[in-house]
Length: 329
Ligand SMILES: NC(=O)c1ccc[n+]([C@@H]2O[C@H](COP(=O)([O-])OP(=O)(O)OC[C@H]3O[C@@H](n4cnc5c(N)ncnc54)[C@H](OP(=O)(O)O)[C@@H]3O)[C@@H](O)[C@H]2O)c1
Image (cartoon, rainbow, N blue to C red; front, side, top):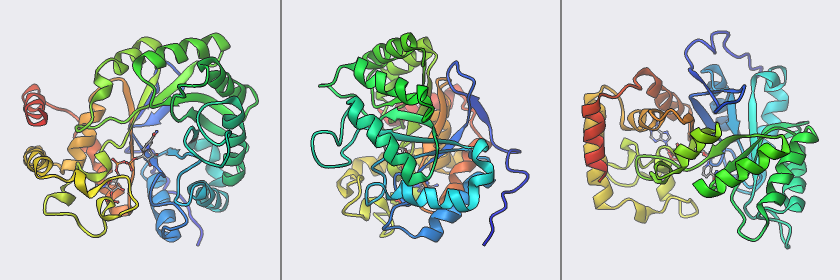
């Protein structure tokens, strides 16, 4: 089957400037952490990617370890890219990361130059790419000098294997230091990828201000708290959900009575706004000017379409914001 993207694909997406860079990212980006590995349905993965590009999503986010099995999301993405997206490579922002455990021995995780650059070479091979658009340090390494980790990102850019450097899961203080090192090296930090949702607001305590001061864009991962911020758990844990998967990162134990009560109230407010809870949760993350994009996951095309409708209504009245504050306490 030949894929021809919709010619209207750029009509309805909003593109936001990433910090003080030249790059515009779609307000909604797609992550391949789940649903694209060797254990998943390849045709479904393909359908989701096609639909995403058709809807104006130009940014696909990967990492060395995405699967399961680790590496297989990049492999599957590479296959789909080669067969269907080659003519559109220059319309895409593809990212990868290194930081978590990828191979045995002392050089298979964290933040050494040895690990980061070997991992990037492996990612490029798996995706059959000459370069990624963004290469991230996936997590700060307390035992490697920050100069070495940032030096590796800078080297990747100077070698042409990445166009931009990014960091993920760095605190406000670590971000400031990393940003200063990168700027001195001549490779400003493009983007920070933190977890941010209605249920996890740590970034509001300093990181967002730092991003603004440093001119770094923000892309919020798990903006639906892995699906909790949708109506799917209101009546229990459905079989086809992340929380029902014993190998998943969302534990069934996270779906507590207390959380459900909160979700029910948020759901009611979302319905009053004329949108689903997932759509309101995404719009709420996007209300912050430092957030360039929300980085969503989608099990299927229906979820992707549903989430994308968040862009139909992103404004909040101050009364609505106050109400949400109250509900989240
Ligand atoms: N930098 C990092 O350390 C880091 C860490 C985690 C993630 N990420 C990135 O962020 C991306 C997104 O993370 P995430 O998958 O946790 O994001 P998320 O958007 O919070 O959760 C996605 C999950 O929510 C459910 N869902 C999505 N849309 C829905 C809808 N409209 N209605 C009902 N349920 C819906 C689905 O779960 P079900 O499967 O239950 O249906 C889906 O798999 C990842 O792919 C990855 O690229 C980065």
